[in-house]
Length: 326
Ligand SMILES: *[C@@H]1O[C@H](CO)[C@@H](O)[C@H](O)[C@H]1NC(C)=O
Ligand SMILES: *[C@@H]1O[C@H](CO)[C@@H](O)[C@H](O)[C@H]1NC(C)=O
Ligand SMILES: *[C@@H]1O[C@H](CO)[C@@H](O)[C@H](O)[C@H]1NC(C)=O
Image (tube, rainbow, N blue to C red; front, side):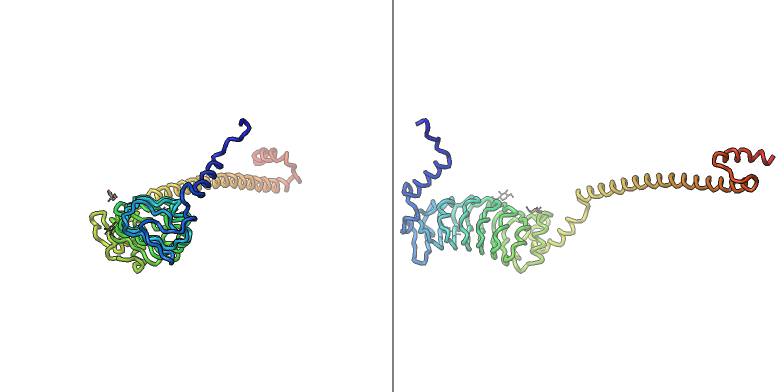
């Protein structure tokens, strides 16, 4: 007994998974049937709309390609059950009570092309929520009255995305840095949100102005705040925001000028110092040169009388000069 190793967390987890798959819970792999209150056809479509379901349906056929669970009261998409459906192409979850979607919810749905999350009660969309959905072409996420925040990188990896509709939510701003980089995006719905038209939405407004043809209901895509811009179309305030937001000098501009000023100041100081030293050296040099020239002259004048003088006699020569004149 003492020599048996402690079961590690890893092996316990494997054991539980094994029990789970082998029949403690009925595995989707072993059920060929159709969930309660749903209709399944041989086209691999499972239709569960409007059945007053409060839970995600159990026992879905593994090969399901289309799943329609709209018009129910489902509050949660369980990642484990959903991710068995790796062939899913079409998922309609509209008109339910979903409040939250996590990074793992769609972890394995690489073929999913259509996703509808409209008419739910989502609060926010985080980074990487849709990350694994590499084939997603159309995402509808309208009419979530409390949806006020979408992470800037939420759609970063959805390179196949063509249609994104986030109309009639509670969005006040949207960072478009990753959206404008999506190569296939051709249709965006933003209308019916309480957009706050300030410097944070400047990029969005300019985008709507420049590529207005991409935006559905562009005429209803209007500012809600500030009050003086309320009701104006985003496209119409874009240029004005651009001017207003880049008019004065910002904090970084001031920092930049201070830094530049400092650089100029120190460069000036250093160069003045170097110049000063050069001047002094030059002055000394020319002085010595002229002294040498002077003494050469002296030598030449003195040399006329008494031949070549040595360096040591130079001083004497100078001293003797006044005497000679006397
Ligand atoms: C949502 O579903 C309910 C039934 O669950 C239905 O009565 C209602 O009309 C649906 N709403 C929308 C907007 O489809
Ligand atoms: C929408 O967002 C605002 C804050 O931006 C908040 O006060 C309001 O309650 C939100 N609306 C809903 C329905 O959640
Ligand atoms: C938008 O998001 C990107 C990436 O997260 C960030 O670098 C950028 O500063 C954001 N832009 C605005 C205006 O907040």
